[in-house]
Length: 114
Image (cartoon, rainbow, N blue to C red; front, side, top):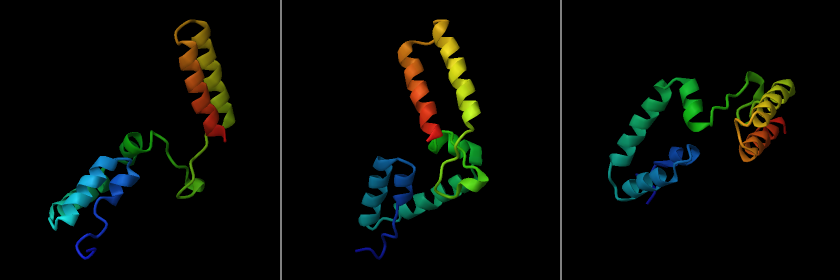
């Protein structure tokens, strides 16, 4: 059963594209070479893609620092996050963003500290 399967489409799980993964697996299980060919095209596309563009598309724009390790997220300096929070608070006080938007962005920034 797994002779021609070769883990086709599992890269789509990493990228958060579950439906595409199921399509790849369905093609692989039918014995079609379409999943293998599509996987090769995906590999070429992702390898020649600009790393910044890849991060923006699939990693929510978060870049890894050199010392962060392969699986660790780079944390922004606390001073940068504090400055951004101050700017957001000014926008909220001026009425340019709502209280809800401020709270969402504040939580997202505070998660980066941890």
